[in-house]
Structures are given as structure tokens and as C-alpha cells.
Image (cartoon, rainbow, N blue to C red; front, side, top):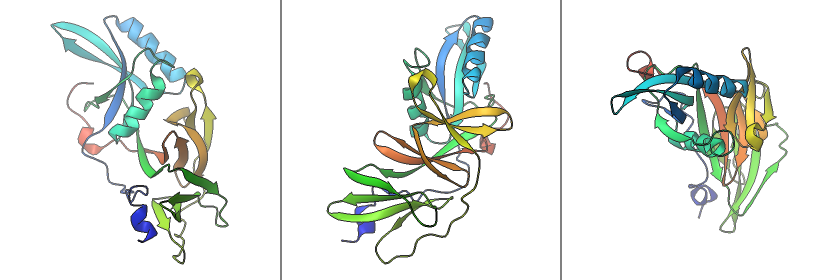
Length: 230
């Protein structure tokens, strides 16, 4: 059986730059007092989170929801919720991003592979983030070329690099949990939870329990612009 077939459940071919029709966010708390909510938002922003608030009604009462970020994939939002809950905030739950959420950017994640029993990062001559994985007695390299993940078998050519240079990524530990952050003109912004193991183009390559992913900031989907409540 071809290695590529064996690794079908590991390698991701999802690298489309097109924005999805919907996105996700993470809610940390809903408060009655706007001043309290503003304090929570400020605290989260000081830590580097893209935090914001918005009004909502429940049982005839008005609440102020404090939420964090925009994520183009629900699994990415869930990873953030897991890293926030009990570490940075008391609670954190995934919610659908509302059309007028006060976010400047989204985070997109592309899964490279779900970590099998045997895998390791290798230093490739071309500098591309490369991981050697073994599955069912077979092996292959999984490479991120700056735009997408590619499975390389024996004898097959390595992908051409889209770009090795890009933003500066750093490691942060809000609440004692490892996160990857990106240096932006507006300051250091937390990107996604996990351990920084490489980068290419605009993406940081991040390891966390069970998976290796490429994380990068993306534009807010046009379908979410204007209309609706925060």
C-alpha cells in the first residue's frame, strides 16, 4: 500500500485561502455589569488575547458577553477554549461568531498530521518544516511549504517553498499554558495554544497533544461583516 494512502488520515490537504461561510469564537463569561465586563476584556487584552464584549438578552435580561477571538474552524476554537478554561478564565465555551463581533482578524489552522506513535522533526536542507512519521510499518515525510502540508514519499520530489520568511513568532505562557504569539504592529498577539516547533511563510508550526498544526492569522470572513449583534 502506498505511504500516501497510509497517511491519508494524517496529512491535511486543506490549504484553501478562501474564507469560510462561518466562524467561531470562545465565550468566557456573561455579566450584568458593563464595567465588570470591560475590566475582564482589558485583562484578557493585556495578556495578548483578541478579547471583546457584546450585549445579549436572556430571559428578558440584558447581559454583556466577554469573548475571545475568531477562528475559521471549530476544532481550533475548541483548542483555545481548552487552554483558557481553568487556566486563564474560570470557564470557556465555543460559540458561533456573530456578524458584528468586534474582531480585527481570524485564526486559521491547517492540521499537518495527527501524531502517531513514531514521529520526529527533522532538519531539512531547504529549511521547510519537515516531520518524519511512521505508520503501519511505513514511513514518509510531512512537509509544510509555507502554504500547505505535503506528504513526501521515497523518490517523490519535495515541495517548492512558498516562503520561509514571515512574521516573528514567540512563545508565551498565559495561565502557565504554552501559546504561540505573533509580533504585530499593534503588539504581541496570541495566535494558538501549543509549542512552537517551526515556521514558514505567515504560519507558525505548533505541536500540541495529539496533533501538529500550522496556525496563522487570516482576514475576517466577508460573510460576517456587518449586520447582526456582537
